[in-house]
Figure 1 (cartoon, rainbow, N blue to C red):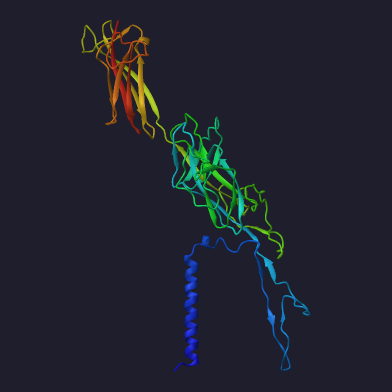
Figure 2: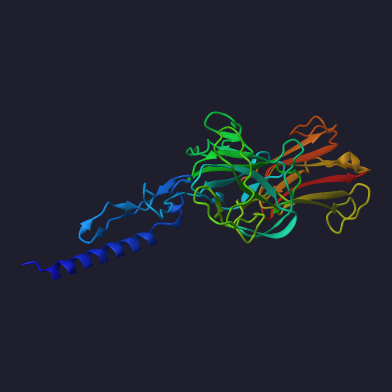
Length: 403
C-alpha cells in the first residue's frame, strides 16, 4: 500500500533526476547554442492575481496590472533589449602560401551574428603595419608587405547571401555571378544566430622574397538593420551606462575582444580576426667559374692559358627557396668573351632533380636557336625544366679555345 511518505520519496527522487539531467545538459551544450535568445523588441508581460476574503466572504479578485478600481497597480510589461554580439573568425587552417606576382589571392573568414537582432555589419580589411611580431592564430609573425594596389585595391567578397548557406567554396573568376561571390563593403540584414563566409582578396607584389609574410585582419562593426538593400548607420555606442527603460529597446554590447578591435578592453560593437599570406618562391643565385683544361704544349698536365688552350666555363644556378623554379634558362653570349672561339661538342648540362629535362641549344645571332651546332656558335643556352626547391642546382658547362 502506497503511503504519503512513499509518494514523497518518489517525488524527491524524480525531482533530483530532472535537476541532474538539466545540469548535465547545461554543461554539454556549448555557450553559442544559446546565442539567439528572445528577439529584441519582444514585449513580455506578467500579471499577478490576488484573491482574498473579508471574514469568511470571498471578495472580487484584483490584479497587479491596474484593473479598474484597483489602487497601487505596478507596470508588468517590458521589451527585450538588443544584445549586440558578433564574432569574426578565420577559416584558414594554416598560413596561405602565395607566389610573387600572383593575383586574386584569398583569405577566408566567417562572420556570425550571435546577438538577438537582425543587423547590418560594416566591413574593413586591415593591413598590419610592416614590422611585428603580430599575434595571429598561427603564432607571432612579422609583417613584411602589403597588397599590390597598382591595378586592384584590396577587396572583400561575400559567399552567397546573408543568412543563406555558403556555396562550396571560393570560385575566382565568377564573382558577382548567381550562386557565387559578391563584392561587398557591408553585410546586409544578417539574421540573429546566422553567419556568412567572407573573403579578403588581394594581388601579391612581384619580386617579394621567399618567406615574406603579409598579415590582414577582417573587421566587422555592427550597424542598424531593418532596411534591406540599404547600409545601416554604424552603432557607435550602447546603453550600458544608463538606467533601464522597460518601454525602450536599448542596446547592450556583448561582443568579445578581437585582434584589431578599437577597444581592446571592453565590448565595443566590433570584432575582428587575422590571417596570413606567405610568399613561397624560388630563390636563385648564379655563379660562373673558369678553368684551363688543355693547352698545345702541356696538354692536360698543368695546362696554361696560352693561345690554342681550352678553357672550361661552368655556370651554376642554385635554388635555396621553398618552391621549385621551372623553365630556368641559362644563356651565355660567347661573342661577349673577347678572343675566344666555342669548342665544338663541349657543351653539357647537369641537374640534381632526377626528373628534370635539360635542353641545350645553339645560336649564331641570339635569336634563332637550334639543338644542333651550326658554325659559328656565338651563343649557347640550356633550359632546365625544373630546379628543385631547397638546394636544387642546375649547370651549364662548355669550353672555348683561346685565339
